[in-house]
Image (cartoon, rainbow, N blue to C red; front, side, top):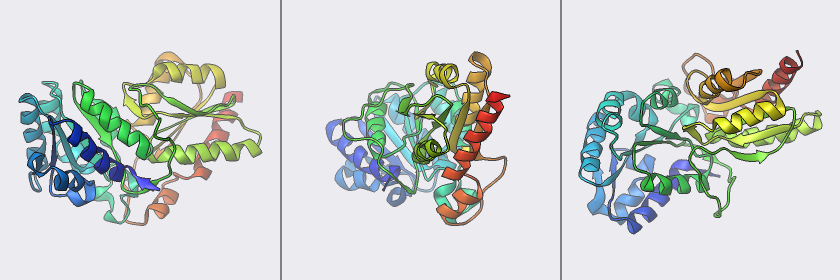
Length: 311
């Protein structure tokens, strides 16, 4: 079990040693975001702006305008929420080459409580023109996404978690922007997941076999641009879709898939995610249970989707 923020810290250091244009910025949370790994190895290209997230984005924009590749890191709540205006007007509007690595996203921030549980950040970031939005599912995918972001010309939002997640991909894994990865094939329903929820989605598909259900599982790491081709194929082949995300069901992966299906391939859709509510303080496991983000919840959603498909 490795948290994607842990993988981010290591990947950032390795990237910085290869690419002299990479500069890392943090807002006084480097021990938590793991940018301290980069800072200790390459201190002359590490900037701590202090507890000043709007300034974090402004400085990153300036460095990008000067030809650098800045990785700006802080908690997702502050990156997407507190600094939204700077991300919108100073980074996305001029399409500057800033990479925003937002850690501690979702409900599994745990005991930090509702004020630190970013459940709306995907909704905010994917609404911005020019912004690319990616949610890695494990350590290997995180490392590939960091490398991709450094090569990509334009703003990128990378959503990372606090809690450890199981390994899904090996070192040979290749990330492709806007392309879903099929982890299991099936004919009754397609489960589309991102981030921390990919592993439970795969487990749910395994459990469903015993109950007589055959489920396709897609890892949809790229929320924007969305892989509409895979969604249309999923509806064509399985006739129903379940989305799983550690985010509000409004505006995140589920919202994006719902929009795509409404326009290109209408079919029964069930969304597993946090409903229209704030979180609360608790252990990650307890919160995942309370807000219905477990394997059992995915299994139940699949059964509802199949019943709706049969009419």
